[in-house]
Amino acid sequence: MSSAAVWMMVVAIGTVWGGLVAAVIYLARHPEEPDD
Amino acid sequence: MGSSSGQTEQRRETFSGRSAFIFAAIGSAVGLGNIWRFPYIAYTNGGGAFIIPYLVALLTAGIPLLFLFYAVGHRFRGSPPMAFRRLHPKAEMLGWWQVLVCFVITLYYAAIIGWAISYTGFSLSQAWGNDPGGFLMKQYLQVSDVTTVGFDFVPGVLVPLLVVWVATIAVLALGVQGGIARLSMIFMPLLFLMFGVLVVFALFLPGASAGLDALFTPNWSKLTDSSIWIAAYGQIFFSLSVGFGIMITYASYLKKKTDLTSSALVVGFANSAFELLAGIGVFSALGFMALQAGKPVSEVAASGIGLAFIGFPTIISEAPFGTLLGVLFFASLVFAGFTSIVSLLEVTVSAVKDKLGLGRVTATLVVGVPSAVLSMVLFGTTTSLNLLDVTDAFINSFGIVVVALTVVLTLSVGLNALPVLRNHLNEVSSFKVGRRWQAVVAGVTPIILGYTLINSLQQRLREGYNDMPGWFVGTFGWGVVISIIVLAWLLAKLAWSPNSALGQPDVDGQPVAGPILDDKLDAGRFGLPAGSAGGKS
Image (tube, rainbow over all chains, first blue to last red; front, side, top):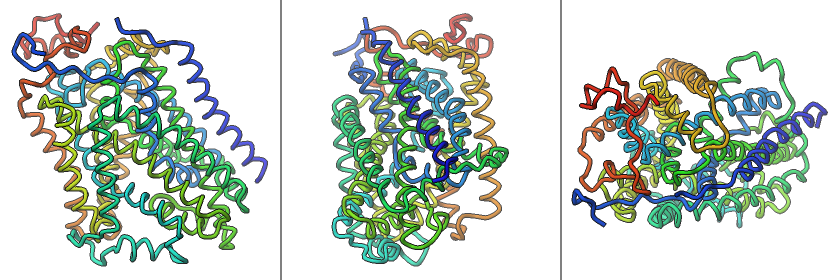
């Protein structure tokens, strides 16, 4: 693999999977409220 | 329980919590397209450079549209026809249009899952021998030489198709939490695990690095080409299943206090995370295939049915541990497809259930059994492949795109519903949205969808479709997408059953949100006192 391809693969995985991890952490920090 | 009006009170089903909803929504979004469409779209649209328009599309269209449809479903607590009927007395037709788009897709989507079930079994013996293409067309599908609709059934296709329908009906009969959510909470982790194993396995195949090189080498010059931006928005749009009622339906089953936007962020990123994983797995395997054939990756790269049912069998026959690779790949297609078809059929089931005031099991059978029969009659025969091809192409280009465009324009420009929906999102969610959200929903989406529609229209009117006969394309392409609009209009004219939940309060006994009406335009027309219109808060 060329270095450009490796770099772009890392960027793609980092942004998309990183986004997923960040979204899950954000959700976990805001617990579900019970309905009244 | 009877209400004061003598109606049977329908207590709306709910997901047990937001995790159940998130798994179900990911199960719906992650489907066949993630596995067989995304890798090729990324490869042909700039490779590594595609990630930029792709992320922009996710953030400016995919996730904002998830917010929009979650808000509609959650605020108006209904299947698309009921949610739109409650949103505005004249908007019910939009809901039925979405339902009918889902209904048509369900009919042929079931067939492809049936093929994947067969191929999971074929992987064990590598039944396709050394000619996967011939095996698919001649032995398995027994494709007719004539492009028509016939009734020569193919038992090998019909039996797995029946299995898919029985399983789908069974899951839906078990209800929102016991069926849909439970299925997704088991199948989604399993799918990520199976595909993860497949990717690790594919990465160790000889030639995998050449495949990844082809997929990720950036072609930066393509970024100035509008076509890759359209491709990125198209991929995000189709992949997330936004715009044709699924997310409205699922969000209607959420408890009243649910963090909608934060849930949508998880769903949007999880869908993309899976398709990126699929891209890595598929192109590693294609790199191996290219090495074996002594060809460049560009000559073996493919998408769709050709990739799954011809390309992968070729790889499976040649790869070490090919049987394992085959079972993992086709079982992943089955798992991804099954959670999606459950969501597609649920849209129709919930619409009929709401309109007629039926119970869960009755509504599932009333919708599921005729759908299964129709699906098997049309797609269990020797003429199924061309029919599937033309229906899929037209329902995507002119069904999903047109209904989504119409709905977004109606909600934004027509009814000015976005401020109310934004307030609703912010009342229940921790991740707040502002005017920028309204701007991208009302601005970006219609432009991209409109441009895509005009392009597709020009191409189809100029070229027809794949040299298929005019009558065939006219009936099963144009005919289907036009007739569902007429049918949606007729269904919206039908009276709601007295047993329907339309006029009933929400699960907590509180009234469901009032319609979004324009005080000046609508209050008089619908006999409401000025200022009572619920939308301008």
